[in-house]
Image 1 (cartoon, one colour):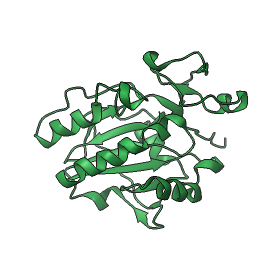
Image 2: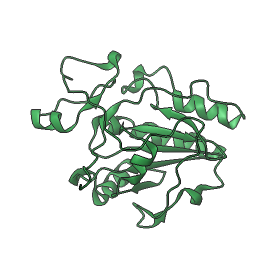
Image 3: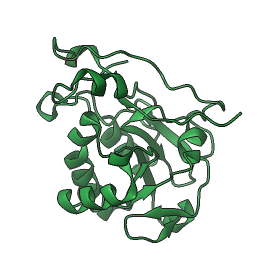
Amino acid sequence: MPAAVAAPFAPAQRMRDRVHRRPADVGASAAMALAPSALAAEAPKVGDAAPDWSGIIGIDDKEHSLADYKEAKAVVLVFTCNHCPVAVAYEDRLVALQKDYGPKGVQVIAVNVNNIPADRLDKMKERAKAKGFNFPYIYDSSQKMGHDYGAKVTPHVFGLDKDRKIAYIGAIDNSQKPDRADKHYVRDALDALLAGNKPPQAETKAFGCSIKYEKKAE
């Protein structure tokens, strides 16, 4: 799977942050191992009802649920984190997405399920403040949301329609570098949904750092 990293890592960090890359973005300095996350349950597909969730703490120290956003015409649920350079590269684009589509009834929700120190709630609060996040950023330390949706990398997008069925799964656009992105998958999906149509491309290959799923005790 595809995606370049914004900056080179030390060898130990490269081993921790296996990146799923797009071929067009791969450089000589991005020699990282690729390996999909192993998920226990079968992932939902486009057209399936979105897995429900509730009681998820946010950076506002309040509990959030999918039902809290029942008035939204569409929900963009983005699995992301603080430490991954691919996820970091998309932060400004998520802020712009909420700014542009919020007035049209769309709600962006970022969720982090990693439990490494750099991705815990205290660091999430710091990152959101520094970047001016204008959308909820929630933390599921149980990692259940990630397993339920079949999220594999950060960022990994699940676009939900007005009936809360999954209408889009995949990447935000086709390049980690903003100036190289010429296919804006999520924006195109939202334009279609808001017009009462199906997304022109309902599924794309998500690329980024592997989500750090923890092994369950036997």
